[in-house]
View 1 (cartoon, rainbow, N blue to C red):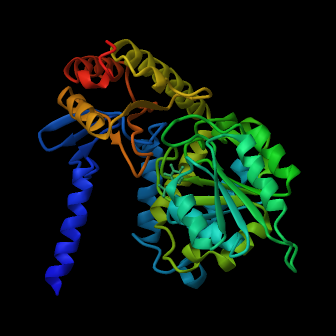
View 2 (view 1 turned 90 degrees about the horizontal axis):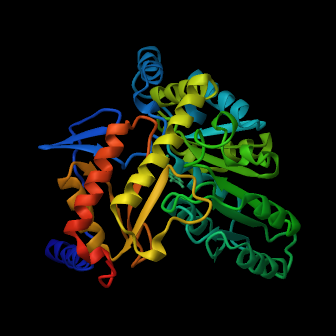
Length: 414
Ligand SMILES: *Cc1c(COP(=O)(O)O)cnc(C)c1O
């Protein structure tokens, strides 16, 4: 019978391969601020989310190392049992102060924050409305909650309003429900564009819905002192649930939810990914706290300015070297640190990524199921840790790759 298990898996893997969607892991043997070493390859990486270079910042690393010496490698228990260490509380107080919220709660990952918070807030009979391009963890969490899941067209407030109107017409239950939760992102992870937040906040308030904003790609990058998109637009107090990760611009690991005292109390009592999971490692909490400290200094401002500069230079280089299909010009409202180069065909995207690798640059090909079928792309991410020389290498690599991969000029337009 074990033969049939193996056979079933083999068939499914064949199907993945046949669709050009095969993925595998590549061990990185060594990394510096912008370079990865993998086997024989030494590659300038435009693939990370370490937007400010903080994961290798001496103060952030030292805070993590000190926490290991003071607290140990692990937290030894879940938060509610005996793992609620002072480092975790210090992080949460720092986060709440940084985001100007009453309270904040750390999770082991951003993914766990999403799967904890959504089912804690809504359940069967309620409604979750997500942007079509929202991150998989928010979609998974919405499904897990048992609420009705509705998807609105990306950043399309008219489509969202249509769904909110429908939800307002649902029969009321005894507790005044159904409750309606809108979920979207500050900066979208695969397209790099940002949400029309002011209009969205106004809309959800008009319909009495709640809003959860995932700022995984905007915390640390946007807004005064890197406090994110909501802070940049002065809308923080009108958003019920603010989510982020500690693993991207903050250079550490973990996720968080910030909001009112009542929200955080509810999560401590109801969020299953918080309750039934070992507390995050002390090193991650301490490193993230140190990164938050850096964000609000002049060094933080300089890192953000440098990121903007590098992203603009990188985008100019790619545009000079590589003629993108006309319909793949980056969307309006793009902030720059995430720059998709949309190719369309999955196999062509993979071939291009291979050519870039041969030219010394690591840019991942992003395919279904991360993005829609036929919307395969190269996803470039920039970091304050990139140098001008890195950006030159990128431009040259794109130049070479585009000569060698004529199929990208869809239909021979070149
Ligand atoms: C990365 C990411 C997450 C998950 O955060 P992790 O800390 O990596 O688990 C959630 N939402 C978005 C939009 C992300 O890009």
